[in-house]
Image (cartoon, rainbow, N blue to C red):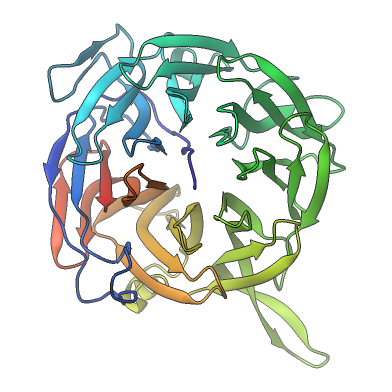
Length: 458
């Protein structure tokens, strides 16, 4: 089950939680009767408004804990008020981590991070009562420091703060990820180290108290190699997505020693490497990945392949790294939306697994304004898709679409089996202006700042 996540973009935020109930509607294709689906009605949805009109973007870090509760990380401005009386204050803003009840969507506790101007970029909860999170900090994010911190899940008491060793410029590009081991409660950090003469991905294992146990890196001939994601299997071994311009590969490391066990390159698309963004491990320790590739069409004599847009890819590898199947998905947005904004680029952001090995994928689309009067020429996040894939053969089980005026983004999805056998799915995302949910329910938010939402199915 997926425990991490996901990245955070933006500056300083103040938060309020307000619960509303929404339903997915008739434009979705449901799964078989009795199966929990992301195309069904959520149990609850929380809106989390921000108050910074200058924020240029937003992500949310999300993890599920072993008891079923959720852990959310982000950033806030000078103050943040949470239901139940918790109030966080900081002169210039900082990061926060909060425990949220999966039963009600209400906050159990909320804590600010230690540094000035920090944001939480990734989060994971282990089975020994600790939630670990990565912070990226410094005024206006100018201080390029990354720290792994741990707090007690019971009350948020700080347990450790461990700086992440970096090389060269030391900036985490394209991003850092964190995962928790089901075997020993340790944590893995995966990222990118930029140094001379080459760059390489970074992977380290920490014990439950934040002490580093080992460190490994994946050498590359490409300067663009980085970490796409990281996950533990049931035995506590690590699986890392290593990404370069030439290929995406899954690398397995022994969880105890850090020794590399195998490397398996993902099948390439019609026009080159898949960009793999997320990894999850199913109950059989098989591996599922979500990413994006360039779609192609063939024409001419002799025939040649030409680019025809982008498409979302979900692939499955065996526990030994053998390719089992790879499927591409193109019809994730309504035809009318594709016609209105033909330049949109779909991208998968996160993946999670249920007990049957089926995959849930969240993502969105990017579009660049055409430069001209009244346009910015900037890339925007628009619309959110939810995709459910059969783990056996990769067939699409259902898909649904969240859109609206303005900008929307779906960043993280997490699943968790509770001790009583109950199962839950949680989605985290954000929007500016308007978010239209299936079934005719619309959320609106005036102003230029972002509104976060959490949706939970159980």
